[in-house]
Length: 383
Image (cartoon, rainbow, N blue to C red):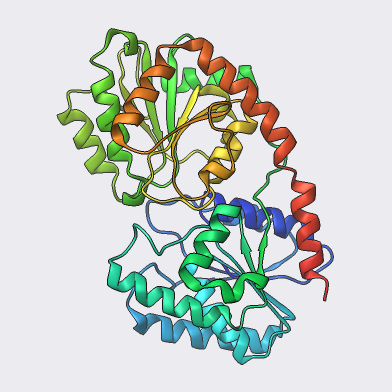
């Protein structure tokens, strides 16, 4: 298996489920990059299992191809020693390097999972076109391409072409329902730790604090909303770290919002909280999970939140419409004006929040079965 950094987030959580399931029946070599300074690694969770792990320290998100040449030489040596029957790549750069080398080493089965699409909202249009050409070339030698939703599958076909349609399998993300159970007690403890009372409406953004997540948009909308008396009893908590954090703190303060770090009080408008390794208390505490991303694949935090009885407010982008029931478990929007209207609707109507939460829990329990997901991978790994 070959993935990017083993940091808290959807790809790592998904990969951990596969490792846990297959480590007793398969010999696994996990290749991965080093986390950035502001990222929290899940490496120790992977080390609990009987697998071989090898960190490729120089593998960065940089577009400079020179370091990648040395990385390829390093991985080539590892492949020769390990001699895998299957290579399963996750995320974009591992997907390029891993699939290219797998083909050259005549690996029996090459599998790639798209956790998101970098063709939109990440790079310039010219560079995006180059990446599409690279992906199209690699798709020819990929045996199985995994999309996480029907929408994502169509996005891949739109970019690469219908010639690979027979290679694409849709295997929805799922998580263990035993590990994600709502707990009012844990939620109250989390609220106490960040200084937010039980009766306050708590909105949260959870994940990497990066430009593509467009957190600035949420802060802007929330600041306008706070001018209304109906929104006075609400707090937004932004959970995570990243290169945008300091600028977002400055933005919120410039908008005259009361900003606190790690712990606030009853007058806090926004609280910035660092990465949380234990997210069950977080989801048990919040009323509404908010996303305002420019682009998304299939956000695992939406699946987690619904399973933890949380209402969703999110943009109608990527695979998001495939993993919610619009109007029942989530309110979706297309633009800033619609986002403002629906956030206001939620904050001023506790009954609506309660209904979305109950529907979300029921839907997630029925839809996101980890046993079905793992059975699909059992078939792929049986060669």
